[in-house]
Length: 182
Image (tube, rainbow, N blue to C red; front, top):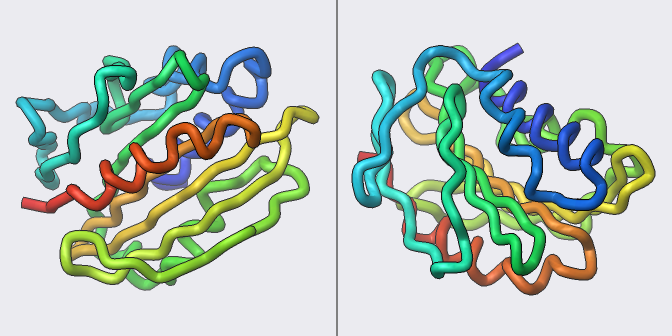
């Protein structure tokens, strides 16, 4: 299983296991990772395989320092989580954006894509999909954005309870719109 798929699978699994809080997953986030932890310097994240500039977030979003994943942020005020991850592997480019997006939600029961649209991120076509579903009978609403650029796949997620979803989606959209692979 690739790093990309493992990260989001753990993310979704932990969200469901911690039904009181969508944001508790980050303590487990590193368990799926490899040793390519990367480094964030200002707004630039760099690994051995890639580097990229992330968007800014309001002060209510706090970075969670994790090993093995790229970046995770939580907003305890709205009980929401945001992630960005990268996987750089020429073989992964053969998969469609839709297939990559769908694979990020392994384990979600009753998964339903509410909206799917092509957007542009960093000058490239990306796929944004909003899903609802449940994990361990806990309702969840997730948006994914998947982007292929050169040999890398970048995925962004934002997750919260359905009732809090609209409270952080603007922050997520702004964050993604400012992304730039370097």
